[in-house]
Length: 200
Image 1 (cartoon, rainbow, N blue to C red):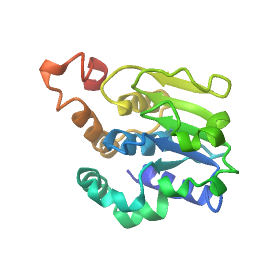
Image 2 (cartoon, rainbow, N blue to C red):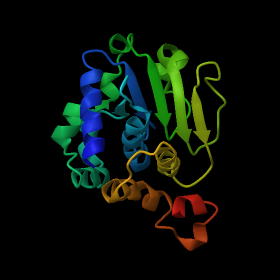
Image 3 (cartoon, rainbow, N blue to C red):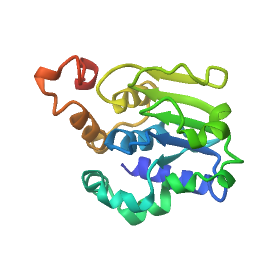
Image 4 (tube, rainbow, N blue to C red):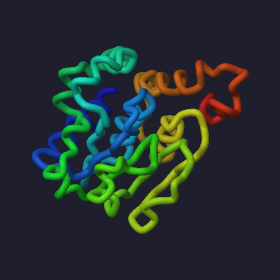
């Protein structure tokens, strides 16, 4: 997990005082979008630019997402650490977005209405497992949308293709949304809530 944690810390420095590269998770701010935004920010970052994950809910709501906080804290992502290194909904105000160069979306493929007019031309990457709305065709550089159990499955596949280190800790970190979204791989739900790709 150290490379992932360090990547998020480095991205915060890169995106301060102005946001430049951000990876926004679904506005539901569920396990899939929170974990997915962190893994995708790590995937899309490189030596030239670093994407910060955005948990798209107010900071004061996060403690009430108990299962998410318990999971994150196991890997050193305490509430204090998150406040210091990750961006939240209230950080995406109009006066903080004028310097944004690139946006990645994970676990959804359409910006929230309040961000649409500002960020639409800068949506460059999408990884999602919902119905494709067919947006941002003129700005997209990469898109992977597939109707499977978890968006994190698709992020994991992209990490493997990019030869990003995928150790046992990151595997455990990624396992939570996979298990939740598949209802613990309930055999009766195969094909509706999860696929073989999720199991793999």
